[in-house]
Length: 132
Image 1: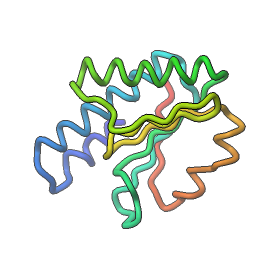
Image 2: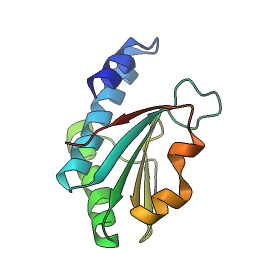
Image 3: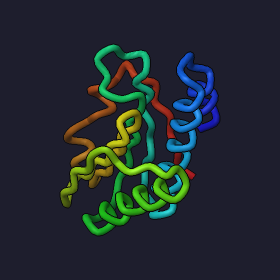
């Protein structure tokens, strides 16, 4: 994670956005880990022209109840630590998306993560694992 935070801080963008993104990134990872999200991976999309965000953060849950718990944890911790609310949230029992514009969080049930294969779709992105 330090590598990603250093990269965020090294970008030539307004300092407030860099600080905001690195703080948000850390809060999202913390929230997922607190609810025992598995196989946490971030995709650094900043070098991909077609990318809709700077980062995707992906993880797996064992059930729809855990998907909701992780998404709620992300929302709660990011609000407390970063004073940010998601731009958009899409919830389902199989895949939930929490969109903070520059950082988009995807919480999947395992089979659906394999099926949609975001890591494969964004294979040009640098991938970093964040499992504790």
